[in-house]
Image 1 (cartoon, rainbow, N blue to C red):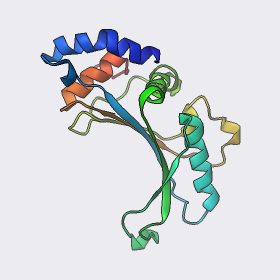
Image 2: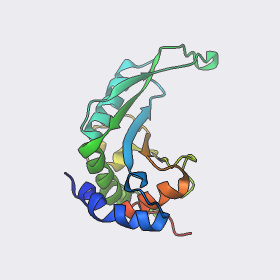
Image 3: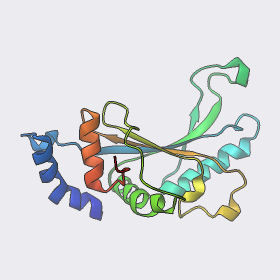
Length: 180
C-alpha cells in the first residue's frame, strides 16, 4: 500500500467525513481511477507518431497504453470512424495512488511559473481534468529523445457526488490549487 493510500484510510477519511457532514464512511469521496490520455494529431499520416505517443504514456504511467479510435467521421480532417487517433492508460489501485503522488509532488512543481492548478476544471460530478501542453514535464521523459512535443491530459475520477466533494478530497490529498 502506498503512503498516500495509507494516509487516506487513516486520516483523510475521518476529516472529510466531519467536513462534508456525512454519517456513512462509505459515502466519503475517494479516488476511483486516473485516466491519462494523449490525442495524436498526425496519427493518420505518420503511424510512428502513434507508437511514440503510446511509448511516452507507457513511460509516464508504468502501464501499457491502449490505442484509441475515432468515434465520429469528420470530413474536413479526413477522419473516419475507427481511425487510430490517440492513446490512453487507466490506472487503478496502487498504481493510481503512486501516479497521483508523483503528479502532485514531483511533476506539478516542475512546471515553469507554476502557481497552482485551476479550481474550475471540475466536470460537475467531482471529477478533475488537468492538461499539460508538453509531456516533458514528467521526470521519466528525456527531452533529448522526444521528436515531437505532445500534450497529455489527466482526468482524476472520484466517487464524489459534486464538485465540492471532489475539491475537498483533492485538497486533502495535497493537490496544489490556486489561492482564491
